[in-house]
Length: 178
Image 1: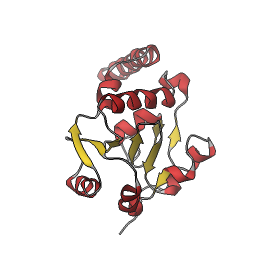
Image 2: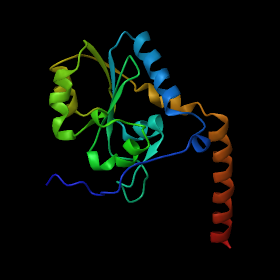
Image 3: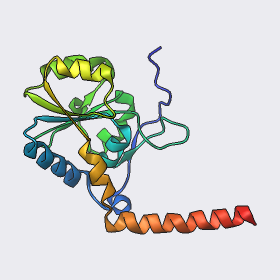
Image 4: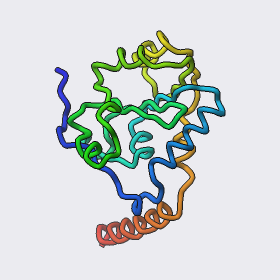
């Protein structure tokens, strides 16, 4: 059974909602890779992919996190590991080109064709399965995914939206208690 739970495609969040364009976030990752003398970062935590690319999905009933992984290189290029039917909107918006979509069944072949020597994987979220596939080709640097740190530093838009959500939450709680 290699069935995708939801066939609904991923969607992009507008910059006015997130406060920072995905391209500027990717530049930060490139700088991190160059500082760590690595060719690639393999992002295995779907919530980090969602934050980095400003995308969401319908894959889980209680969360807007899209089920996917990402590989970013030290030249701002990135590849999304997911099913093609999930990214039709992103291709239409010109956020992605079809060659940047790697079907999960083609992941091993994709990895074996990448150039370079070193890849960073998150020591806490990368599965043994993926680690074994990647280590056939690359020297692995096990580190914390740098996106966790980047996500923790909020921009003005994110702070404003968090404050709004606390107001909505407070109203809902008050109504519930009443």
